[in-house]
Amino acid sequence: MSKFVISVMEGDGIGPEIVKEGIKVLEEVAKKFNHTFEYKYVDVGGCSIDKFGVPLTQETIDTILSTDALFFGSVGGPKWENLPHHLKPEAGLLGIRKALGAFANLRPAKVFNELVDASTLKREVIEGIDLIVVRELTGGIYFGEPRGFSQDRKKAFNTMVYTDEEVRRIAKLAFEIARQRRKKLTSVDKANVLEVSQFWRDIVIDVSKDYPDVELNHMYVDNAAMQLVRNPKQFDVIVTGNIFGDILSDEASMLTGSIGMLASASVGGKVGLFEPIHGSAPDIAGLGIANPIAQIESLAMLLKYGLKLDKEAKCVEDAVSLVLKMGYRTPDIATNSDKKVNTAQMGDLIAKAI
Ligand code: NAI
Ligand code: MG
Image (cartoon, rainbow, N blue to C red; front, top):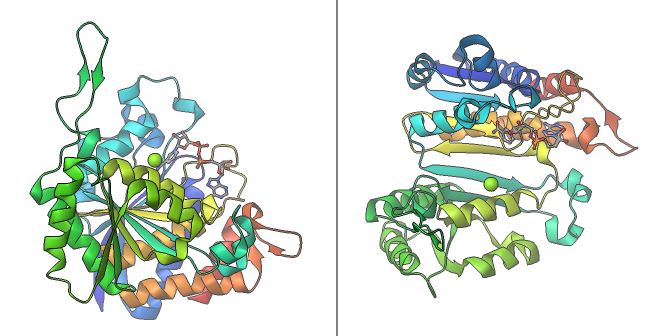
């Protein structure tokens, strides 16, 4: 029997409603696999502003850093929209990501075959997609110096910078993930134009020597953008820099067409952060109809990448698949023939399926 301490951040909007379902499922995992999970509830974002006047406190950061993983709901909403930037809920999210030192963002795009019709793409293109984008998160053009405007404001500039260490650690992580999956890694760059990309490619090739069992290929980012919609099934793991990853991960997540289903993880720091890709959905908050599956899939990622509990993660994923196969749907993914359920009922069904 193992014991883990999880920080839980329910947050704003639908956050508390769906995180609750995630914990419900986690408690079933605890029973089935004989683990104990202790929860430390923290506030980030609007809920923190309401309690403490700021979107993130040092105490919250310290609490999170003392735990094994952070299970994160969502932040933000109209109530806090007019605050200055550094006091907005979203500043809390950026602050916590920074404090955790996570250098990698993982965004899986997996198609549930029961939901292929939610996509705007053809069924035969979509069926069977199972890929993950590994995006470098703390380097590249978003952080490179120098940056700014010329004095006369006739010019503006940003700089794409990567160090050997930054590329090496994200490449290693991506190879490790590929090794646990279908052993295929695509490194995306713009090496035909950018020196930084040639540098990136050389280092990825160097790292690949430690992973002879993983098949590596390289793709220019413009081609990768095309291939993602033309033939997304060719991909297993995609690794790329910050700006290319920002764009490609959003593109990849829309292949499946259902925002309420998709999870993400920010890892590489001391504590990993696991959250849905969607926001706080203020338009449906409090109605009890939000889809908890993205949050529950985030739980699966927490188990897999945060606690290294592969069997438990797989069990959660299988439980979600089973409930979808049985025809149960929250309103956002429902068609007429489905059995419609609300947030709590969906959570109950998945917990039972564990
Ligand atoms: P959103 O993702 O919250 O909502 C977009 C649309 O998708 C809405 O119609 C919503 O009802 C629907 N939706 C989202 N999640 C759903 C779910 N689980 N089940 C059913 N339907 C779902 O994006 P939006 O409206 O642009 O942003 C709302 C607030 O969330 C803003 O304050 C924004 O800054 C914040 N936000 C926070 C994020 C985070 O906490 N990581 C990420 C994105 C936005
Ligand atoms: Mg983005």
